[in-house]
Length: 226
Image (tube, rainbow, N blue to C red; front, side, top):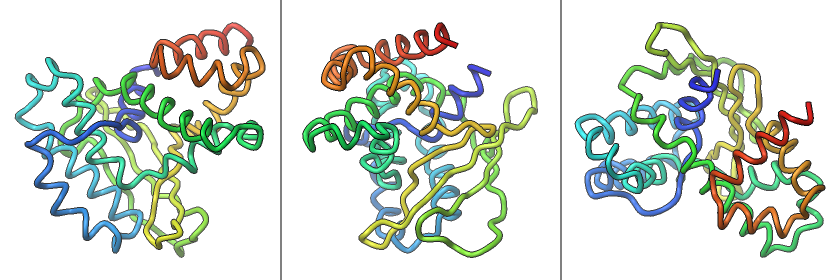
């Protein structure tokens, strides 16, 4: 299950930094069209861009994690609403936080997740993600795109991407549901427990200074309390 979560999370969330040279051209060409794309087209585009950026560069990316993270940033970030997702993760604590704290939390939390799951992308190859046909009407507040990730052993992992239409009119993903488990809900519970224990300012500081280690601590504390 951990391996599935790592790959699925890496495919969906990870970000920060600028794009490496071999990924910039394809992303720049795709950027203008992204505004016109429907959610299902965005997911398919991400899967295709990711394969193009990684194929032929695995050895290089294995040695240089920052370049790997840069690819994630280049491919995912234009299509993901970090600020909205972070507010959902903070839950009721978002109202208690200052605008500066919310901004810091969004950047630090997303950066931590990126570093934690980036290496899962090295296992990604074209065709790993099957985007399922979209049925129904688009809902501006919540439209779900369903996909399946094919593991090396042939097993399928169901992954749903929740999208909303932004104020600028383009579609942005804000949640990923892996085999029925919502990324937002899962981390909201952990963040809530951590804030109750150390306070929101200390949590943000821990994420900024410890990164993925802070997430590991949150995970461990969450499991111990169950």
